[in-house]
Length: 119
Image 1 (tube, rainbow, N blue to C red):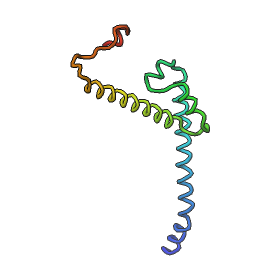
Image 2 (cartoon, rainbow, N blue to C red; image 1 turned 90 degrees about the horizontal axis):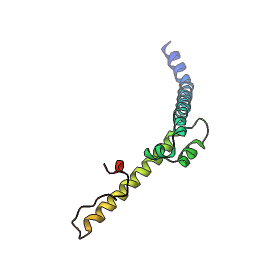
Image 3 (cartoon, rainbow, N blue to C red; image 1 turned 90 degrees about the vertical axis):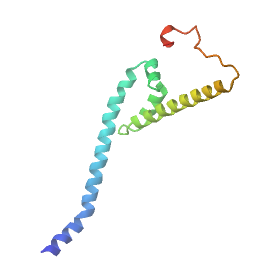
Image 4 (cartoon, rainbow, N blue to C red; image 1 turned 135 degrees about the vertical axis):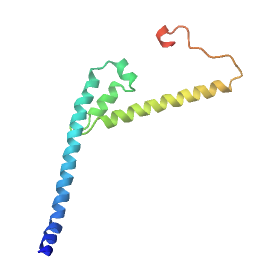
């Protein structure tokens, strides 16, 4: 009897693998739909709030241009990370340029900016 049992298990393995792959794909699609619903809340934010998290309206359009079951949060996270790295690079280059100057006086922000940005 053990030979027949192992034979049936061996014959059933491709079917089990296919079933497991199908279940994974369905879970991935469900996660994509859920994230799409949650990311739809970003469309209600104004441009200033989107800029605070490193996104633009164009990023939202690009993320939602894919198929309905695709996860838009991957695209949105990538765009926000690209902008964050770009800002860090610019800030680093500015700070490196400030150290090269012969002027030793401290640099202050422009006085024409609102006080809330000077803190």
